[in-house]
Amino acid sequence: MNKYSLSENLVYQRKLKGYTQEELSDKTSVTVRTIQRIEKGDVQPHLQTVKLLAVGLGVEVEDLIVLDDPKEETVQRKWMLLIHGSPFFGLIIPFANVLFPLFIWISKAKDNKIYDAHGRAVVNFHSTLNLLIILSLLLFFLIPGYNFMITAGIALFGIIFSLKNFMTSLDTGNYYYPLSIPFLKPKA
Image 1: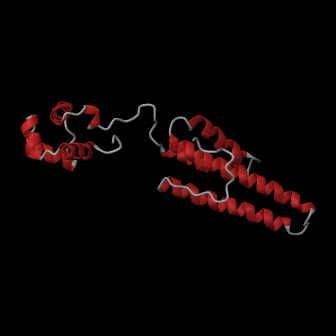
Image 2 (image 1 turned 90 degrees about the horizontal axis):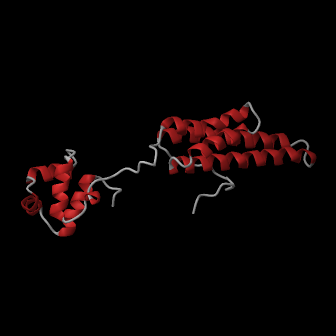
Image 3 (image 1 turned 60 degrees about the horizontal axis):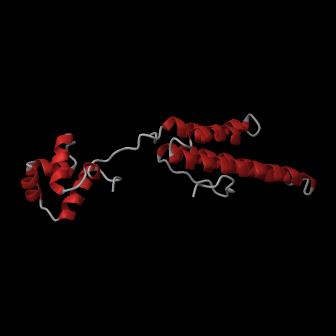
């Protein structure tokens, strides 16, 4: 239940106990108006008020207050920019499209699960692209005239989806890398 805000937790606990706002006010010596404002989310109450409400409801203060995990870093835009933008170095340096995101993912994966998921997706997608490009270049020996079209198509596909995911991950935090082979599988 700690995923919800203080106001949602207070409403949930109050209704779970079957109290009205007036009954809770009588039990806690907190005014009805204050309870209403807390439940609407208009105010951030003092810790003493939260303690009084917790005692009146017969629950722990932790059941009402939303505590952030201090070990988990907040998602920062610069790291999302680096995770999704660093593969473009692969246009200049061979295999940098996998190596740079891999190093960033290794250093940031334990800080936040979002960095972990995005890093895995980027590394998987670009590893798949590298594998497909190498295979298409080897096709030169089987189909000498057409492998250039296949290689260019794979490279264009990679650039288009990298740009698309670069923009959408910064705007909405979502990504979609199709046709990726899951070299780095998510943790179970």
